[in-house]
Amino acid sequence: MKLITGLVHPDVKDGTGKVLTRQAARGIVLREMSILLLFTERYNDFSFPGGGVENHEDMIDGLRRELEEETGARNVRVQRNYGYVEELRPHRRDGFDLMHMTSHFFVCDIDPDLCAPKMEHYETANGMRPVWMNLHEAIAHNRGVMRRAETTMGLSILRETFMLENVAASLDCSPVAVG
Image (cartoon, rainbow, N blue to C red; front, side, top):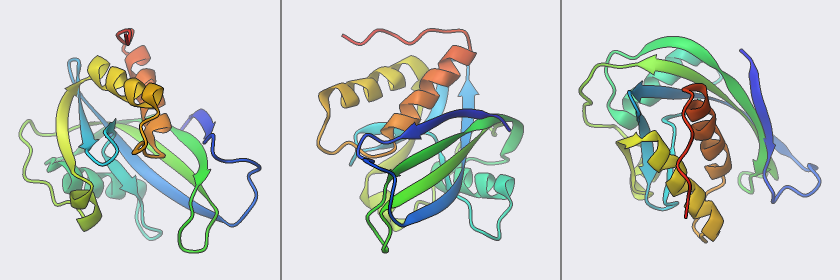
């Protein structure tokens, strides 16, 4: 798997402190110019479906589980490994100061119809829901949230927007301009 980029969140000042290390698997599911994403009302952003892989869990099994739980996807077929993003960001919970997140991205295919998602309590409370979204519109939306520096903006929007732009570029299409 290739390293796509390394990101350091702007709120990380010196990179010192107790660091939580986490592995995540995220799915890239495309249908023409639509992409399966999660919209989270709390943060007003679009993100790739996927999440943390348990220590005992295979990366692909974790990806399938996350896609099924968060989007209701059925028959998840991993087509290829896309690459990974290394990320250092604040994490002020459970006695940690920072999180070192490695997000592994995979191009996937799924059956056409989605079942009802089985979100975790915090995901439901945050207003998370799966949506098929135009790739360009998702990029423009997230860019707008960042440009306005919305107070509810989540920590993952930098990674998610970078990867949306990366996927768009790999499809040889340019994102729409944001006014």
